[in-house]
Structures are given as structure tokens and as C-alpha cells.
Amino acid sequence: MFTGIIEEIGKIDEIKKAGINNILTISCKKVLDDMKLGDSIAVNGICLTVSRFDNKSFTADVMPVTIQKSNLGKCRAGEYVNLERALQLKSRLGGHLVSGHIDGTGKILSINKQQNAITYKIQIDPEQSKYMIPEGSICIDGISLTISELERDNLTVSIIPETMQNTILQYKKPGDTVNIESDMVGKYLYNFLQNKGKDKSNISMQFLAEHGYV
Image 1 (cartoon, helix red, strand yellow):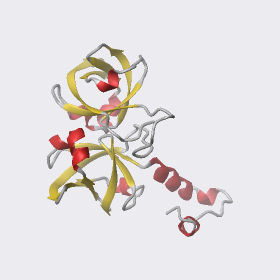
Image 2 (cartoon, rainbow, N blue to C red):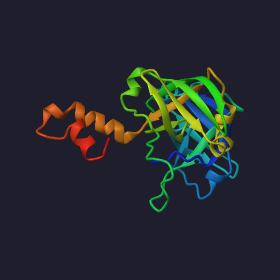
Image 3 (tube, one colour):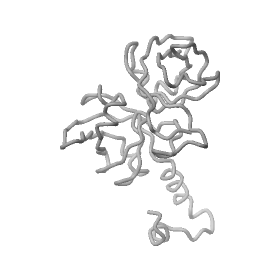
Image 4 (cartoon, rainbow, N blue to C red):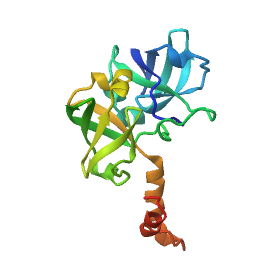
């Protein structure tokens, strides 16, 4: 489990094929602190497991389904990635609950500066929008953000200078692909309501709205 608060920007040192899998080696500093084999690291929002590490980098295996579903298949050696270690129970939850299991990818349509913030308009699969609401949480390339505008096939987020400076969004441009994970609470809620007719629950969208949940 993660929070979507990026700890540092890492650099891909090597991408190596091993049968149908890819082996990713990433140089970094902060996330190596107290690292152990088997630890989970979110790389651009994707939960990967540490298979090897030294004092300069760590290595993780990337399964074919992850390559197909994320932007890691388009990454090359020398590119930068967002990194976050798994959440500790004693940590402050500064972002929102992030599983590291992305729903798919989106494409940056435009980037515009608005006073001290920069807005990113991102094209999404219309199927993904059913889990989202305006002012709701979204995880983009591992970054916990708030949706400022939402349409069926695109969303807009506003990036503050602190986030821009400490994440790989500073390197992104229109046309680039980003990983997207919708808020897991929204996904559970949607699934629950879709299956409501199969049980005797009296909970409805009206009930949730009246009690301040939506």
C-alpha cells in the first residue's frame, strides 16, 4: 500500500530481457534506506518487488502484463521515474490510499500554466471515468492528485510547484503516456452498487449522498 507522495526521482540504469519478463535496474538514494529483498517500491505508481539491490540502485522484475498495461514498456534506459516506498502504519497519510495496481494509461493532451500552478489535461479510457468524481483523488504516475475537471474521456489536474519540482511531471510533454490508478474506495463502491441487486442491502446512491459519503 502507498500514499501517492513521491519520495524521490530515480533513473533507469538498465532494462534487460529475461525470457518474457523485463528486469529493471533503477539508480536512487532515499528509497534504498533500510531496503530489504522483497520490499515493495512504487515505480511510476506500479508496485514492483525488489529482487536485488546495492548502495546505488535496486532491481525488480516486470511481468508481461505490467508492460502491456503501463507506460513502463515505453521507458528507456536514462529516463526518470517516480519512486515511493510502501506505506508504514506509523506514517502520515499525506495523499490517499494507493494500491500500486494501475487501471491503465492515459495520454497528456495539454499542459497550461495558470498563475502559480500548471494544469495537465489527460485523455482517459471512458471506462475509467466511472470510478472518478470531480475533486476526487486520482493517482497519476504514482502521484496522488485531485481531479479539478472531469469529462467522460478526459480529466484535468492542477500541479503545484512543489509537486512539479519533486516528480517526473516536470519532464512530461503533450502526447506522453502516464499510468492511472483510480481511487480504490471509488472502485469498491462502484462494484458494491453494481451488485446491489444480488443482496438485500438498502444502501443506494441517495442514501450515501444523504449521509455525506458522495
